Length: 366
Ligand code: PEP
Ligand code: MG
Figure 1 (cartoon, rainbow, N blue to C red):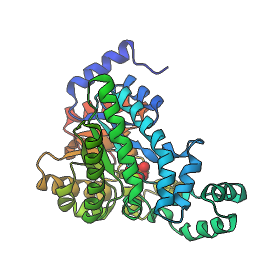
Figure 2 (spheres, rainbow, N blue to C red):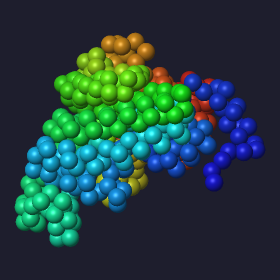
Figure 3 (tube, rainbow, N blue to C red):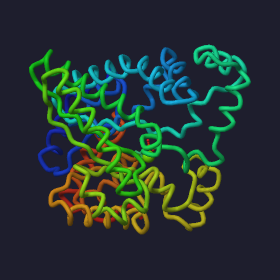
Figure 4 (tube, helix red, strand yellow):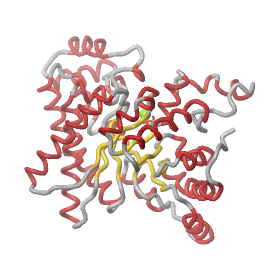
């Protein structure tokens, strides 16, 4: 069982005395959240809700949601998912006990949820009261040539509003349940993925606000909450001043930002990146250590523009780079408020954040 003790715990406490950056963890399961807390995470910086959808108990309803012919079909499937999703958030809010929890609304490339093979097609056909052939056609219709650049993130929230509405309902109902149980109200931070235009955030933020209002009216309980966005597309960084008008916080998704800045697939880059590093074309794998010249420049632009619109706008990073010591130096220099990384990297991030504060940040990635 992970725990910090002895000299290591003492070292961590010293480090904490110096650092300015907060350290959060990326976590979606109760086990991840508990591990994060034991390692000293000061909140959840990224809960990837799509990971919860792959649970064998739920994937059937998820496939029905995607494959349904119309909104009422999607709503019926989502009604089955709501209690599961509400419980997910109850668990996380309980474990995090008042620490901030950033919940990102659904962001999968849609194809990850498509049924594959005859058995899965037949199963979803039966649930939706149609035949396997119709489902085969629907799956072909939904398939994308380039899913990572396709019907993903907030684009799903815009085209199928009932998905984000259901997730928002699960968040607020879950938070209210925990507030009643513990007497301490969680403050959910709802995060919208893959935003590239201001209207995308206008629309999805309004969905979340509508649901919050409805749930507060139904329950007679009102909670504080915030709505923010990932900055993970170059366009979002470049128009961050306008996006900040409707965002309570930014979290840099440097995995996608690296992919889209380099035009380099995060899933396939391993095939040739080692050669690039060997030949000195790139100093390091940019998916591991933040590329200061390109991705870093965009982070800097977005931070300045965002805070130009809203002084003190909360800024974090939740890509893999949030746990990379060299990248953490850069985060310190740019003045981010927190880094968020996988639970097991939290101790290293705490140390790196302290060292970065002592050295005043800077470029350590080369
Ligand atoms: C990112 O893009 O950096 C991010 C944190 O989101 P994901 O890895 O889930 O796309
Ligand atoms: Mg991303």
